[in-house]
Image (tube, rainbow, N blue to C red; front, side, top):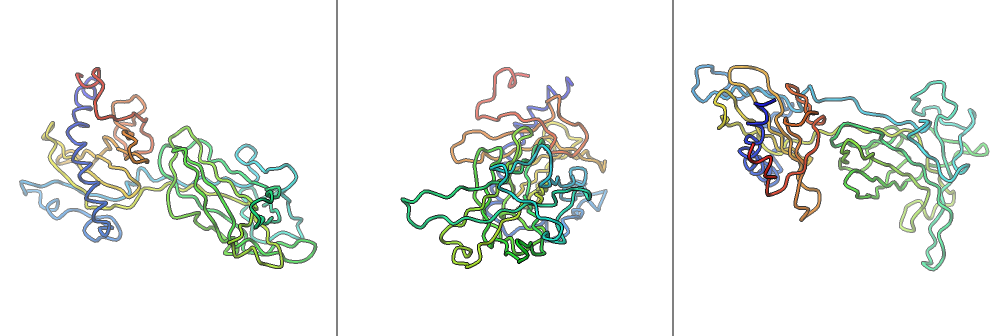
Length: 340
C-alpha cells in the first residue's frame, strides 16, 4: 500500500493532461470510430509484433476489456420492490384470454405478465386542467458505477379489451432520472414490440443513486395518437439496464511511463465522456486500469470524478473501471494528498 500511496497520485498528475488531450482529439475526430479502422476493435499494434524493436510498446488490445463486461440487469413489471404502479388500481392485468402471447416473463409462473392502462389526452386549452395521469415506475436498484443504456420490452402481440384489440401508443412518454439529477423525457413507439432502445444515449449510475424510469399515459396534442378514434393503451412490461462501455473516439495513446520505465501507460478516450489509463508492464501480456476520469456533465461544473487505485475499494490487477470508488478531482489538489 505504501508503493501505491507514493506513486499513485504522481501517476495521476503525470498522465491526466495527456488523457485530456486524448479526449479532446477524440471529440474533434469523431469519425475515428475504431483503432486503425478495425471494426472488431481488437488487434495488436504493428511495432508490438517485433520483440527486438526498441520502441516496442507491446500494446495488445481488445475493447471493451473483457474482464469489465457484465450482463444487463432486467427489472420486470412484477418485481416486488423495484416497480410501482400509480395510482393504485389504475393499471390493469389482462386475463389469459385478453393478454398478448409474447410478454417478457422473468418468472414463468407469474400472474402479472404485464400491465396496461388506457391513455388520456392533454387538453388543447391551456386553461383546462390535466386529466388524472397514471404512472408506472421502474428503479434500477444498486448497480456498479458506470453508464447504462435503457431498453424497453413491449409485447408484439395485441391486447384485447372487452374482446376487441386495442392499439399500443405510437408515442408513449417516458422520463428517466439518473445520478446526475437530470430528468430526460423520451418517447417510444410501443407498436414496434419486443426490446426497443429508449433514446440514443446512456444514463449514469454512481453506485448509490438509482436510475428511475417512469411511463405515463398522457397523449400530447402533437402526438400521432391524439387524433385516433380508438384511444390507445400503454403497456408496462420489462426494462433492461445494459452496461455501456462507450465508443472509442480516437486511437489509444501509449507512452513509456515517466515514473517507471518497466511500464507503459495506455490512454483511451471513450464516447461516454471518460478517459481511462491502463498500465501495461513491458514484456508482460497483462494490463490493469490505473484510473478512469469522467468529464463533468454540466458546463462550468468545475470538477469531474476519478476512480483510482489508491482507494481501499479499488480492485487491483483487474480491468473493472465500474468498480472503482469515486473521488472528486479539482484544479488544486488537497495538500495532504499532494505531498504524499
